[in-house]
Image (cartoon, rainbow, N blue to C red):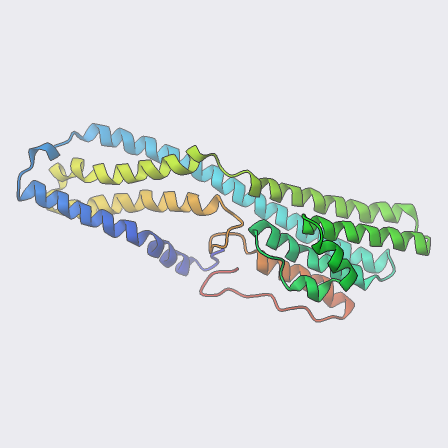
Length: 291
C-alpha cells in the first residue's frame, strides 16, 4: 500500500508511462498525416468522441467505486481480525490464567491467513510460533488459517475443563474465535469472487479505443498541439483505469494491495510482547510503499 503521497504520484506516472508514450507516438502520426499529407478521412466529427468520453468516464467511475468497495471491505475485515486477536491475547492472560502457547498460536494465525489469501506457501512464521505437534496437524489441513483457529479452540476447551473455569468465560473467548472465523470468511469471499469480467475487461478495451480515436477528432481543432492535448486526456483515462484494476485485487502482491505483512507483524507484536517474548519487527515503508 502506498503511504507516501509524493512517491505515490511518481509511481502512478511511472506505471502509466508506457501506454502514454504509445499514445503520444500515435498522436504524432495522426497530426503529421493530417497536417502534412492532408488525409481528409481524418476529419472525424467531434460529437461521437464526446459522447464516448462521457460514457467511458461513467463506466470507469462505477467500476472504480466497486473496486474501492472491495479494497475497503477487505481492510475493514483485517481491522476486525487485528482487534479480535488483541482481545484474545488479553483474555488468554487474564481469563485463561496464562496459556502463552495459545497467544503464540494466535500470533501465527494472521501469517497463515496472509499466505492463504495470496495463494503462497505457508511462511516460516508458523514453524517459529506453533508447537511442533500443532504445526503438524495444521499443515495436514487444506484451510490452514481455519485449522489454527480450530486448534486454539481445542486448547481453550482443554484449559476450561482442566482448571474448572466458568462456562461464561469459555463463551466469551469462543465468541472471539467465532468473530475471527467470520472475518476470515469475508476475506475468502472477496478473494474467491472477483469483479465480473464486464467490470475489468470492457473499461480496459474502451479506454484503448477511446485513446486511439481521440486524436482523429481533436486534430481538426488542435492542429500541431494535438499530441499535447490528446495525451493529457488519454493519461487521465489510463490512470483511472489502472487505479480500478489495482484496487480490485486487495490481496495481490502489489504496491496497491493491503499491507498484510505489516498488519500480521503488528498483531504478532501485540500478542508476544505482553508474554515477555520478542517478536519479529514489523516492516516499515520501503520507498513509500508499506508491504
